[in-house]
Image (cartoon, rainbow, N blue to C red; front, side, top):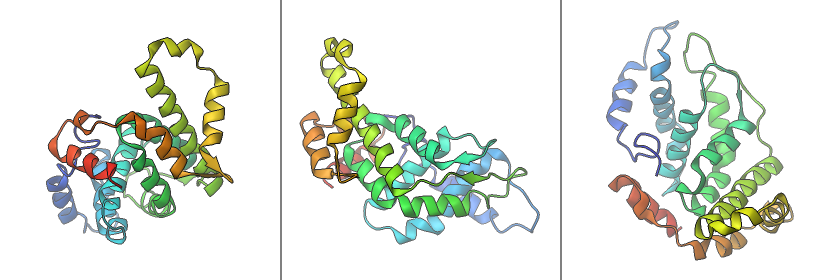
Length: 216
């Protein structure tokens, strides 16, 4: 599992509460770049998180935490590349249900990022560009799911590594789609035999979340 603080459950909540108290600052005040991640998570807690239900609340928060870790704040944010980079960083550290929840909630996540990231009071504001269309979303997520499947195949049978080429990868990605959209029943059929193990979690909170996620 990723290091504590990336998929850590809510260990940052004390920090977030402290930052929430400092958010009502006079106009013109800026925050230090080190405060950026916690500032965004506070905004998530005050906005999007309140509109989500059940396990989606924590799952989307963990996705945003990972996104904030892998994305530099000293550049323009291109959402299509950021989504791809974040999912690639997450990889097989989560079950496929994580990808389904992120995909289903992506329109709201993207709207949150487009609205909140440029509004963070950094000395140099971040410009958010290249929003992800639905067709791009399906392509990006299905590509990562296909890649994760290949990685699992090699992990189970290292001798297969030499046999993996772009052709079976592309074929698998195509097979996960129906009419251009991810068919989650097909995804489940591919990933269920893998038997994701929540015991890889580094803390009890993450393990509990993963166990709940598997049941979704």
